[in-house]
Each structure stands twice: as structure tokens, then as C-alpha cells.
Image (cartoon, rainbow, N blue to C red):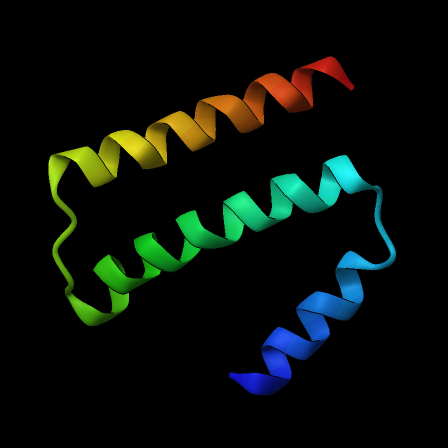
Length: 65
């Protein structure tokens, strides 16, 4: 886990600030979805709404570039 965080942090140093911000948001969404798929965790409806909002925001940002 520590190595993954170190590499992620180093990778963020090589991209623009807007890309880094988007990646940081998507990282949290990926962690939540993987926890459901791999570990069988439960995400409440508000959590799923947040995941959808981050996804929609990412699509809007991606569309502008």
C-alpha cells in the first residue's frame, strides 16, 4: 500500500494540476467500487449518488479538453 501511494504521488508530479485533481477524485471512486466488488462491502444510496456525481463531473471535465 505504501509503495502504491508513493508511486501515485510521484506520478501526480508529472501531470497538470487539473489532471491531478481529477485523478485524485477518481481514485476515491475506484476504491469504493473495488471495495464493493472485491470485499463485498456495502455502499449506501448517498454513497452511490456521490460516485455518480464524481463520474458526471469527470465526464464534463473530459469533454472540455
